[in-house]
Amino acid sequence: MTDAKNRIDETVKANDVVLYMKGTKEMPQCGFSSRVAGVLNYIGVDYTDVNVLADEEIRSGIKEYSDWPTIPQLYIKGEFVGGCDIITEMTLSGELDGVFEQHSITFDKAAADKIREANG
Image (cartoon, rainbow, N blue to C red):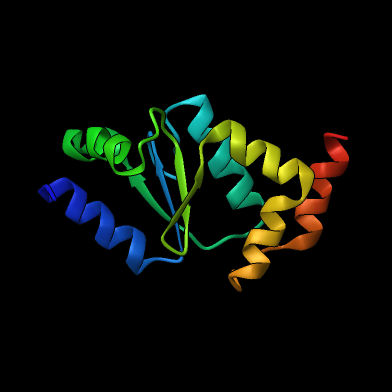
């Protein structure tokens, strides 16, 4: 594995929830990253954010690591879950709640329900 892939692998395995994104959770730098970070922030998930704009090796390496062409990318307990469209769909269907519950990840269920109500 390359150095970038090793660093990605270590980060993904050392943290329960990781979001590879453009920008940071406090200041996303693209709409797609903003949407996923917004969901995670709103429902109170404790997650590690990795700004791919700060490291070109990570930016290209994450696409190879997951075999997924776009950013953001969400990982839960070492597993790639999806990008913006998939996370949006999973949030609205309640499937993301199930993934968090399955892995004992703390989140605000009432806030997740509010997202669904607002988009229903």
